[in-house]
Every structure is written in C-alpha cells, then in structure tokens.
Amino acid sequence: MTSKKKFTESNSKYSVGLTTASTIELANNSSPFQLEFGERLTSMIVEYETYGTLSKNKSNVILIEHALSGDAHAAGWDSNEQAKHSDRMWRKKKPGWWDTMIGPGKPIDTNKYYVICSNVLGSCYGTTGPKSINPTTGKFYGLSFPIVTISDWVRVQKLLLEKLGIENLYAIIGGSLGGQQALEWALRYPELVERCVILASSAKLSTQGLAFNAVGRHSIMSDPAFKNGNYYNDTAPISGLAVARMIAHITYLSEEGMNKKFGRRLQDKNKLQHGFDIEFEVESYLDYQGKAFVERFDANSYLYITRAMDYYDAAEIWGEGNLIEACKKIKSNVLIASFSSDWLYTPTQSKELARAIVRAGNAVTFADVKSPYGRDAFLVETKSVGRLLKGFLTGGEKR
Image (cartoon, rainbow, N blue to C red; front, side, top):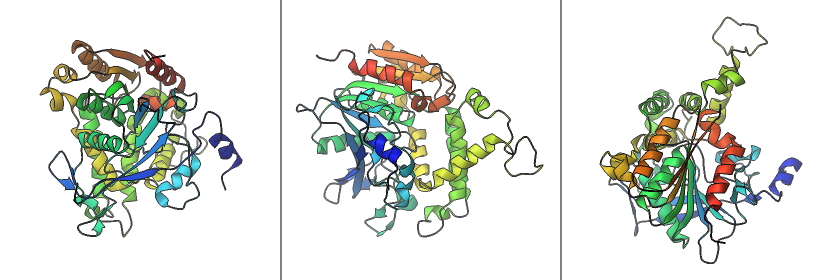
C-alpha cells in the first residue's frame, strides 16, 4: 500500500496528485514517420503525461522537455506505484522528476497552465525505442532501431500536439538535453512558441561532453553481456551501463559540490582497507548511482539518446555554422539560465547562445545562477529556478 507520507503528499493542495501515463500511436504502415537520416518507422507509440486543465482556446499549454535519463513522469505520484513492471519500480520511491516546479501554486502552476511531458523517441519508458518490438521481424529492435536526432524528437512532439488538437505553445521548457530540445522548438517552429526556457544547456555539446559520452558508450558496448545489443532475452549489460552512469554522474556535479558533500572521507570510519574495494565515500556514492540506474534504464536507449545529444548543433543545422544567423529564426521570448559550477554546459556557452540571440535581434533574458551543484543545479536550486520561471512565465501575461 502507499505509505501515509506519500498519500499525504499526493493529495497536497500543491501536488498534481496521482498521475497516469497515456500512450498514443503516431505512426503506422499507412502513415509512417520519416526520420531525419532517411529511415522510416511504420510503428511509433509515444507515452506522455498531462497536468492541469486545457483552456477553451488552448492557449495555456506548456511543454516540458526531459533530460537524458528522464521520462514523461515529471510531476505527481505515479498511480501505478504498486505495479510490478520493472521499468516502473523506481517510481515507487519518489514523485515526478520536476515535482518541485510543477503543480498548483508552483512556478509552473497547473491552476493556470496545461502541462505536457512526453518520452523521447528511443526511450525505454513507453515510447518506441530499441526495446520495442520491430513489427517487420517480430523481434526486439536492439541496434536495428534507426538512429534518431533531437530534430526527430521535436517533430514527434509536434505530431503529438497535433493529435491532441494543440496548435501553439505558451511555453517550452527544458534543462540540459531538454534545453536543446527547447531551443530546437524555437528554431523549427518559431511561430508556434511564445516563450522558450533553456536551463543548463547550450547550442551544442562541448568536445569534452562528446568525450564523456563516447567513454560511456564504450563501457556499455565492451560489456560481454552486450551481445551487439541483442540481450533482451538474456542478462543485460548492467556492468557497462553502471559504469557509463557513474561517468556521466560526475559531469552532473562540480568539484566544489563534491568536496563539500564527500571530501576525502573514508567509507569505513577513517580506516583504510589497503585494497581495491570501496574506500572513499565518493566511490560508494557513484557505485550506488550506477546500481540504481541499471534497475530503471536500458543500455541500448542510453546509446541512442547520447548519440542524439552528440549530433545536435543548432548553428550547423539552422545557420550553416553561424549561430547568430541560426538565431534569427527565433521569435519567442527566451530565458536562458546557466549555473556557475556547471562544467559540461558552461556559463560561457550559455552566454554565447544568449549573445547570439540578442545580436540576431530577438528578446532574451539571461541569468547565471550561483550554485555549487553543477548541472544538477537546475533540478536542485528550487528557489532560484522557481523565481526565474515564475517571473518569466507571468511577465507580459494578458490579464
């Protein structure tokens, strides 16, 4: 049964309460979906969640974009908590990944806005991906699943909105990889997006970021259990995926934050074991993160999503290498927030994007939030991010 604490929180006047994901078919044999690199999907299901009430004129829609390992469950408490499906077991322990921001009276106020969040193509959380069955073969796609891009994700989301009868967005909001999706929305569909919020993100991933993703994928694909992605009827490559997550998790933090949280403290009360098992608290933390991740995520999905992350370069896609030219397409009011200790999507990169938008002649609000939490700050710095979002979303509203 749901604990008393969870029951209280799910029924709080500040919570969207218990939520249930919906699925929708967006492609089939008679209406396939064309991917950016030329392949077609003749079967495509998308999972999504909604919160709040759609206004009569459908002008209050906010689309939330999740980061690399996120999903459509952005707020509230999953009504399927007691389900024993392994992909959902982790949700029993906590609410949606951005529950601090989404709900009645919260910065993304569901008393005012109709909020939608969907899983990206290639996901392992209900949207079609490598873990899905290929209708042509009757077997799991595995690595036969086509390569997908951020542009594909955004076009899928546009198709989802069309199916829901929604033509325009009051706002698009995303952090990290989600921020790049938000940017792509503002570039690809400038007439449809009134406000665009980009948190802890930039117009492209840095060379260092490419390197970290490459090492993570190498770890997965080098695991003997990987079997060229054909492991669904056997043991999954959990060791390789755990190491990939450990590597990635380091990029979510900062040196300042790690020093403050762990320092060089030993796991066993300042007593060295003189071996190669876990000695330091930071080792234990990363080990826990890796083990927890493999219980809820798919290794193949990790490959596809990080590769989509690698490929995205807004300047190349929209400006022939010139970011200012690319940003001339934007018509939205834009909020960009960087975080001082983020060393993957750095404040410098965020400022570069903000300057490009200004030089392109468009409106932009920029904030560099001082925080020791690295890229995770957009999830952790609730008060600062909340103030920015609330001010930006309500500014210029028609009363």
